[in-house]
Image (cartoon, rainbow, N blue to C red; front, top):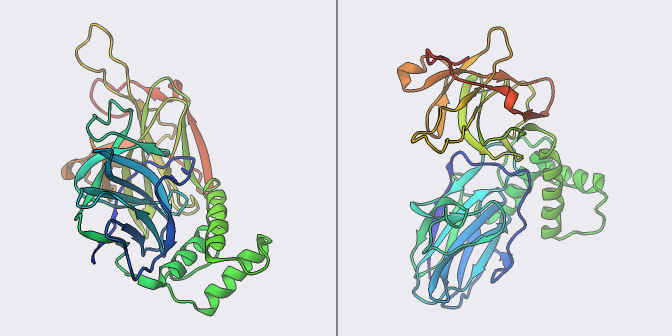
Length: 359
């Protein structure tokens, strides 16, 4: 029996306001232990401290079919039964209710995904199917177990590490996520169960479901939610201080009448700012798209941070041009609160100045 273990790559991802329910077709979640695996069984296991959303692609009815999302808790496995010897691919990302950035476990093969549960045809363009793409991992067909891990490599302690992370996501003080069943973790979990009126002797799965539900409710009240009330798609970016150092990141696309959460940590003491661009439609007699409109500044002396044309993550707020970025004026966010929602309308955007400077 062969197996491969993949570490995550920390990256940008769009955060949806809703959490997709797990797809159920041809899948089941089991404990991460199997001494005897049928020849055509493929286990996708989670030894991280994150609840993962997993998309996979296998041969179905003679064609490659990407499908998602399956939710796999820490210490759990997802079971697939693709035809023997056929290609298979997998992509995973940490669930949106976790505090902090989305983590991705990925490869180099572009296949389709959608925000909610989906099934696609790999022989068709993702654009034609109104879907996005993600870089899937190509898995050896002989491999019967594919395991996602973190640098800390929790192994059989992943379920405890997952409970610790979810307790932290629920606002409880967990100083370290180490997978150890210490007294502090046990007491904190007992407090959570008592405060949520969960009596008796709940199973591990029931504990996770309660913690996930609580984390979803907490996440809805912290960080930045940007809602696009304008007539065109907007692209958003965030800047904040982490351990005393500025970082700016983008871009999160937000369609008209939709919302996204580019920042999912508490706003308290973050000094967070945001920026956005509004796409402009092409006229029928034009061959080039008009320049994006820019977010109108509201401060007398707005703070400037670094942005780039494509997806970016820039450390520091100085010497942007020297480092290949452009300095633009961001809007401040209220940092005396844990979270806020900002609605952007057409009136929040202005045309770029003739000098090329941001207004």
